[in-house]
Image (cartoon, rainbow over all chains, first blue to last red; front, side, top):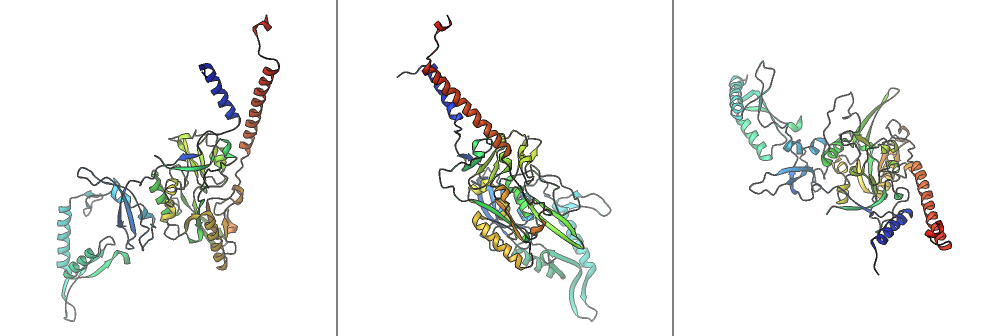
Length: 193
Length: 287
């Protein structure tokens, strides 16, 4: 049976009209949703750098880690396997990806001279020299070898040291040892504040 | 290949009124459960929402409240609202997670005239497809909870999509996962309802006599339910006591559509009858 062009067109139009008149929806009953943005990302288990709770997190990274590739973090969320937080994160922790990718992130020390109103960027050499000089000046000025009763104490009361929740156990050990060697007694931790 | 989910209703189509039956047995129907009594107002969910959905940052300012933004926007799908209500000498500090409630009978979808711009999936999630949106904002007026927000740049409307991309992949929504106090929970709706009843019971034992589950029947129930410690103060939480999603205008439209279809069918049948009874016209008749 041969169908002429005219018959074909007539039949298709009539068919389409008939179907729409019957109220049939020819669209499939499925719809695409946005693809999971972490679907092909590599997962790195890590720890939130902010407070002392130490929530487990998973960083999702794009990039193969190949020689010519700079990896980029695309998403960070809580690690459900962590006994600390069970996958949850506070608002600061939930935004921790910004610490890695934000263009506002400071990458060098800032310095405001006495009397100046503006902060300015300085390099690390300057900052380390400045810090070492101030540390020595203050220590020299406030170091006490013997207390009022003549007992040898060898302590430096003019400086306090506040550790950070983001340093690892080993760093914390080193900091404590170094500062004790300097004679400091006021050594505390950010998590206690 | 993109991921797919089976659909229940599509805006501006017959399925908006009569939900589509799924070929398969539907699968799990999910719900969020927000226990307001457990919320500490940390706004972790807000941040997680922005991070996951790649929503743009908005400049905020302090307006004398713990609240971060003044209002929801097309870039802020979730907002923790902090309502301060004075009651004599007493001050009630009421916190509410304000986002789409994903109604079983969605007013936005009923009001939408753009086919496929709003879609309800079998799992209960109501999603906006911006590529089909015509920017008419009927959904904004159709929503009994005042959730959808118009975006002036893209001329489309946006709201929380319950992280449908995550749900499809078997993950819980970002806000649920991040909540540090277990105030937001996620699971099958029936389980969540049972959970909610238990929570209400506990609250009542502790002296919250008006504790209630917020799962309003006027919209067929919601897929984000609240456990409200002060169930008698729904207004102060800015939760409507009796929200209604009316498919009214759509039903009218459907009646007209049906009349049109019948008329068209009648026309075809009478033409056929005429052809059979009288036969085709021939040029001689006009001679």
